[in-house]
Length: 198
Length: 273
Image 1: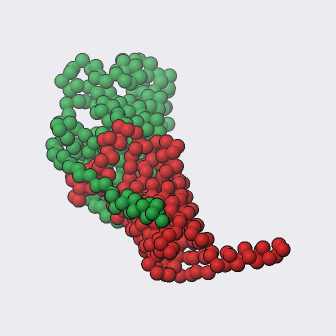
Image 2 (image 1 turned 90 degrees about the vertical axis):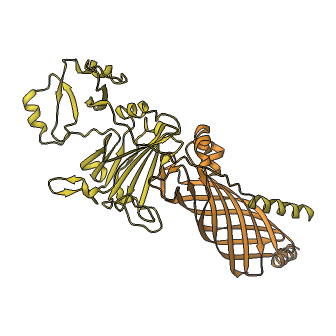
Image 3 (image 1 turned 30 degrees about the vertical axis):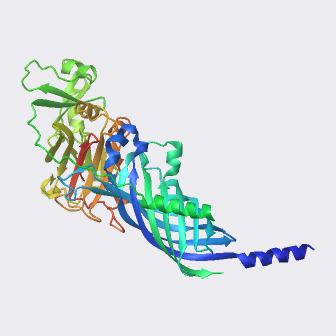
């Protein structure tokens, strides 16, 4: 009896579950937010922070069971923004660009609909800052962090997909009210290519 | 299914609806007025003090009082000797009277006297070793940025370290290996006297690989320090071999600096690195 149940379960998994390995490349439209530098700093300075386009790329591993997609992977992503809180004496273009590079490990759950053409979900990202274009004293030793992400995917065909997402970076610093660290607003648009399915 | 549609529609709208605000920057600037303050620098028990005197005042009374008993009542005390070192002639060291007067001078000649800097100090070797120079008031390039008539930011820098002499015949180009800023003692007084004390005030150190403050990928790096933090924390980079220029796969920074800048800012509008 047990063997029969096991075979039925195995059959069910085989019919509906799928593992995919996907390469992803895209653009981040990101800026910093200085609310954790204090209200006075935020009111005086944050209005000068604007968006900057930066790249990201990575590899994803997803597991789909029925309507649910579990996703993880590893990616390298740039976050940053333009700082217009400057004078044209030296900055001839009127702004300075702050950039940091992060290794990211997403842990996401999505729900598929429209015959699995579209999926939407949310998740967290574990990150480590591996490159710093501008060193801010208070965040110099805060290399690790956690982000919150809302995401959606449009599966164009069996191989290609497009994924817009919004990531609130340093979400853990926001929850713990860790002073002197930037939050990151990151809107991303990625093209994905699935090169292995089984 | 309707809920799913609504969710996706809402999500798309939230992605598209990125707020972009319009900002205007007041670009007006004026040159800094000539100072009428006389500055004297002292070192007492390892702490740096700066006394400000009004050049029009002949009484010898400093205008600031936030130093240790106004530095022993403006050096009226007879318990200390005033000692000068050739390596740092702009600073007066206060040393106890009981120190042997003649032998001590001879003994100290073999050792470099500690350098006292007001804002920052750059070193020839890693871990703050070797020769050094300071960024103080009156440094090479000095500009002030005004907004609505108020000083909001200052820039101290040197556009070409080839022009800063090193030893008898060398120069400081491609020689910097470490640096540190100062935010306590006399430095704290200096910042506070100029109203750089708010939570938005920052000091930004900028190193450039090439002369004339040239920017670009692999040509610049900056460090930003909150000035309130600087009163109790140090901001120092002990080894530029471990730092890289800003950009992808850029070279390390040790002995590769040709111009430097220090931007002090109250927070509203700052000089750009």
